[in-house]
Amino acid sequence: MTPTPADPPVTAPGTDAGTPGRTPVTVRGAVIGGARPVVVVPLTAATPDALVAEAGPVVAAAPDVVEWRVDHLADGAPTPADVAATGPALVAALGGLPLLVTVRTAAEGGRAAVDDAAYEALQAAAVDAGVADLLDVEVGRDPAVVARLVERAHAAGVPVVGSSHDFAGTPPRAAIVDRLLGMAALGADVLKVAVMPRDPGDVLTLLAATWEASTRTDRPVITMAMGELGVASRLAGGAFGSAATFGTVGAASAPGQVELGALRAALDLVHPAR
Ligand SMILES: O=C1C[C@@](O)(C(=O)O)C[C@@H](O)[C@@H]1O
Image 1 (cartoon, rainbow, N blue to C red):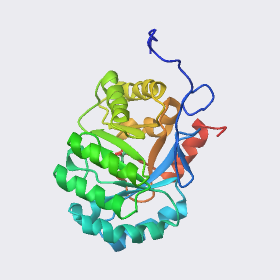
Image 2 (image 1 turned 90 degrees about the vertical axis):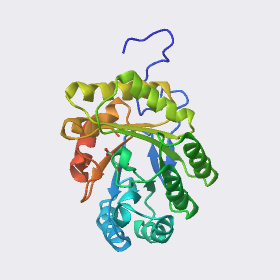
Image 3 (image 1 turned 60 degrees about the vertical axis):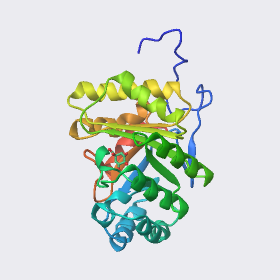
Image 4 (image 1 turned 180 degrees about the vertical axis):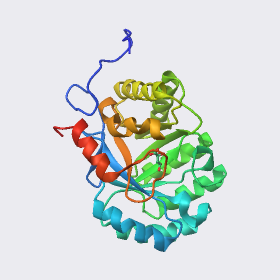
């Protein structure tokens, strides 16, 4: 980018040296915003039994964080009671690995066709059941719902991952940066944006926005360009300031996710000293 007088000093992402005020989020030993991106593996089973079974090989592969895609439960129609009943068994199966709880709505590429009230109830159930180490909150929902969920999570000591998905395309760089920084203003502790690239230029836009945003906030930023075109962002996003990357052990939860072993090999190349 072309620095303007208003721009803060540019520093290497993921290094504490020279990055005043960078605030990593640490959950059960996983440092989000540390020297190297954390690897997150999603679980997408539709029934409680299948979810616990799905967790087995994931735990064996030892990712940094596990994501529970609650919207896949009950074939896309989970109730708060389902969350409260299923969550503890999953947590027990995870053997101490940190759990990110996500209800991905249909509007953002997920399975849950829920209104704001139902969305809030599902998320609240996860917090109240004590199963979430991190809570994904879609910042595009009703602002009052977002504010209440952030407050509820924080009252329970649960950091919030603000999230926004654009499955239709890639907004301009400034819009992506505004979206990320806007999440911080809403109280999110980690700021996450996923976009769908239409050409390689869109991937560059996403990476440029990642770098810019990560120099303008102390909070960890997570980004990815989805689909085949975006794979480079999942492998090398850490070099541009992204604090996490989603990989698979079995089922993927979004297009373009890379198998965990291959992802780790790439991270070893991109972040050799860490
Ligand atoms: O927000 C994200 C990122 C993601 O959409 C991806 O593209 O890897 C996968 C989702 O499961 C997760 O909630």
